Length: 308
Ligand SMILES: Cc1cc2nc3c(=O)[nH]c(=O)nc-3n(C[C@H](O)[C@H](O)[C@H](O)COP(=O)(O)OP(=O)(O)OC[C@H]3O[C@@H](n4cnc5c(N)ncnc54)[C@H](O)[C@@H]3O)c2cc1C
Image 1 (cartoon, rainbow, N blue to C red):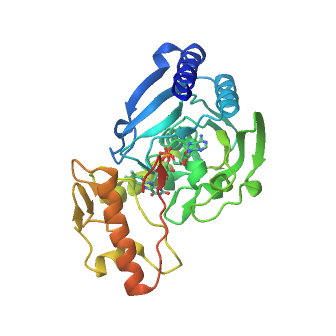
Image 2: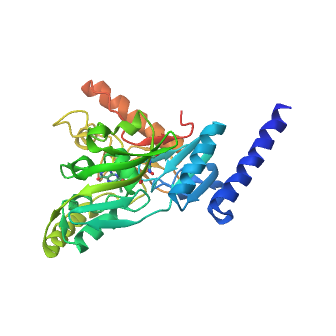
Image 3: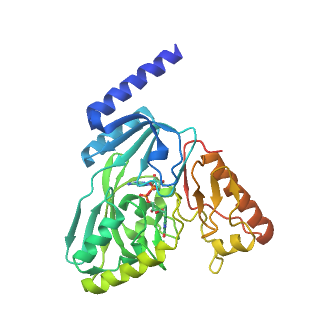
């Protein structure tokens, strides 16, 4: 009896997703390995692409009413997905509009951060060059407070539109409790639907030159699939990659997962890594660093599905 009730609700959910989002936008049992930069992860029961904010609003209301799990996925550049996959709806936002008004840019959450960086250059707006080459959507960047070269999203964001308990609200940057790779969305989930950036007038050639320099620096990062830096910097002056390297962990390998010898705060997928392999490497690094320094490294990457 319980089983048939479950199957009945599955059928309802599947039909509802197809009806609301369009048949072509609903994939069943889609491997998350295709949608994360680690190239790891089992099947998502549903992976749904949402084209319109109004559709998102209706979708979230329904899923919350049904208490059906969902996960908003950007580029999957900071996500370690379980080998068992995700038993719920993975939602990709496909609204990507970018607009300018004087020194302000508004970008939809589904836009790539790189597209916003290029747009700023084309409109002679400076202040976002540091984000060149960070793989992110605007939503993922705002959520993670991603950053590089001593800058981060908190420096340029002024307001964010969110979907929270069925309502679209605008939050100011002060309401986001931004900290190092931290936003309040990590403790009080809401769906980011767009963000307003404040930049400054600049010269296209100078902006392009800064972006070029940053691109060159990024070329030195590992090229294998990864999620960027795995661990957060625990305090000023504690360079995680350097500490891991000095402990001789560069190249440490389990299955297809390896501490990149090139940048020891990256765990890379050398070809056939599983989530399990990555976790074994991650735990070994965490334990070894704690044993030698007394510092327990906190992860920067986000876990999806059951990963322990
Ligand atoms: C090669 C490489 C280099 C990297 N370099 C850097 C770097 O220099 N600096 C840096 O900070 N990071 C870096 N990263 C990590 C990654 O790029 C950032 O964390 C980025 O912000 C992730 O964005 P995303 O769109 O891929 O989000 P995802 O990884 O898809 O998601 C991350 C989290 O954000 C949530 N999320 C995504 N969109 C929304 C939304 N619309 N509403 C609510 N929640 C949402 C997800 O649910 C998840 O919890 C790097 C990663 C790689 C692979």
